[in-house]
Image 1 (tube, one colour):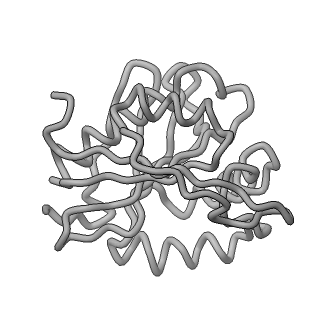
Image 2 (spheres, one colour):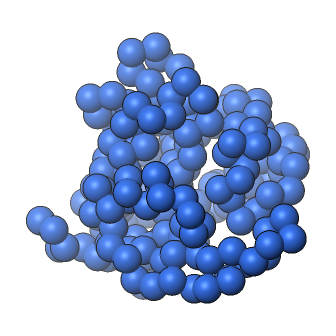
Length: 183
């Protein structure tokens, strides 16, 4: 698996979105998006998100190569609308966990998430040489699950009452794609 330094990561262009590597200058947007209740409701980690937490993430995860994170940019407006990332990047097993969120309300439901998923998984498989890309989606988040399926992720399992969020047990669905599937 090719190992990129954050400064060497390419910009990825699609029809609707461009994906560019995250920088410290994105901190205010990331914090605002992550604290939006409409975004936070689909995260397992739901604590209030601070600039210090984000900068620590950049320093200990992104700069260390454990996370590859990009900003999703609406090509029409040129503005950032969300983020996509690989976490727990494992060069030995050639695997990583996929995550995405659309932070700007006006950008939701416009196909940005599905196009981003397709672009970023192609980047993961073709450029990063990942063999396996997995994800977790909370039960009931059917919009995200359909988007992941359109991008080529397959259902692997349902873990019933896997996490307790806001006092309620919640199912978690595991999905993944492998190199060479669906080509």
